[in-house]
Image (cartoon, rainbow, N blue to C red; front, side, top):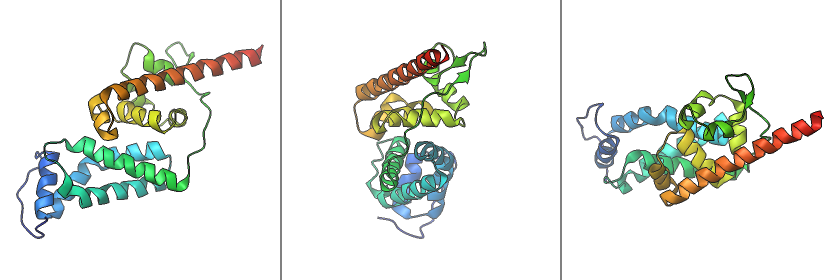
Length: 212
């Protein structure tokens, strides 16, 4: 139970888990604000990318931290805060998405240019040697086609790609967020990459046929 008004001593080096535990116990607003500042850009970026609109992301963002406030007493201090926060944010995003209806499915016929100036699909980059998928995703995070391509995967595959590749969560963290086994996360990532690659190559074959 919160003890509102209780003065708390803390430092910016304190762990997320400690800050939330202290906030749950004392209700000290500065503790909550510190947690928000640590994660506001990261979480909003995740929600914006998943939902595709600033207004929807803002709704989900506000809902996320409202739930953090409401559920702080339920937090198990033996757990890590970040996966717990992402689990809340993911649920909020899904709720918002379902209220407004599924986003329009769009074409995967988009690419970036490789070093030889030839088109290289995001799916190909994910399975190729070179920069890590997280780096690739970061480099392309402002590219409209990346978000559109991932949107076509469907909810279960899209979420693992968003969490693992764009947000940089480890497989075990993504598993904790989604409440599924680590093996399921890995299989969904592989399925997503395979689907992206197949659709990309099919789209390229169609373009060649049309050109002929």
